[in-house]
Length: 450
Image 1 (cartoon, rainbow, N blue to C red):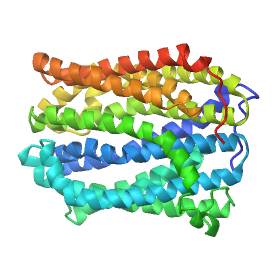
Image 2: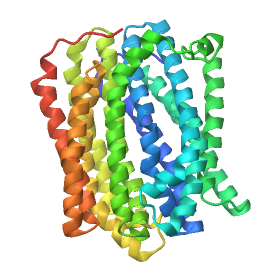
Image 3: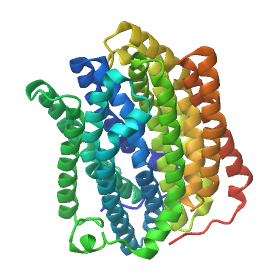
Image 4: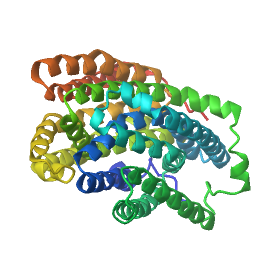
């Protein structure tokens, strides 16, 4: 069983970094799975096949947004319960979260397979990629229940300070998915759907390996008869999880809807623009993942500090997280600028599209630092159960800043204006969350929820 992080002893930065580095590595590997699939599809099947994957990305994120909200709410409760060493509460919350996740994944799989053609048409997917886009979308929806469980299990383990097991399991998934994608495309003659099926099979293998590992270690979250019975959601716990998680889910849904709107705007510039969009979103994810990982770590450390009765440690958690954001995210941003053309060329074979994607990367990459700062403020506030104000600020940044700026500048300056909209939205997010944190939230009395 992983030890509870000792937030009140020793240098916080050392404990924070020990938790953070496996988390960053796991997130990068998770993105690498999709990246390898994209490279294989783009290089073997061509730019239009890659564009079909890119079109589905915001649609997929829309459907997993509520899942991320549920796991965020569960992580807060689990973190506080773990900080207070209430192991039975940890298992109860975990069972409820996994049960709801299983039902949600199954429902979305059915809806997605049926509705994929209509939704992709509404998004304005270019006619020359529509057939491939529908095939990939249906395959991805079929494997979504496994994806949901995979994401939920990793989030639950993080809540108790365990980032090593998710990292090891993600290594297994990345290797298995990469091998399967190439075999399915080259040897079995499958099309774009191979990228989805290979990932689903690999995640199933990873979950089975993790289950065996937890049982052999007699882990607090080991799968057994008791945990199976807890998959039937506890009404009171589910209410708490949803109260904490739904605002985050709503925030992400709004962000996903804005992504659907913006990818529709990008699609209006043609399939080359859509392919460039797909490559840029893949690369920028690597700049944002350290920032997201740091925000997750700040939320978990904040929740455990509150559960342990040490809310005075929150300021130290904030300072540590912000420093990590400047250093770690800053390094990744610098590397992306130095090797932007080489990285983009991994996805795209057309020199014209490579030039376009590199230009777009130069516009947006640096804004990952602002995105990280805003997410850290939000994560620490969420660790105490404060979710509505951060949600309101984030939605306002999207609806009042990001979308209007993207539409206005795209009309004046072309495709690059869409990415300037993202930059403006991240700036508004950082300033709004920081102001609320310092001027309102930090002056309140902070108490544990469990």
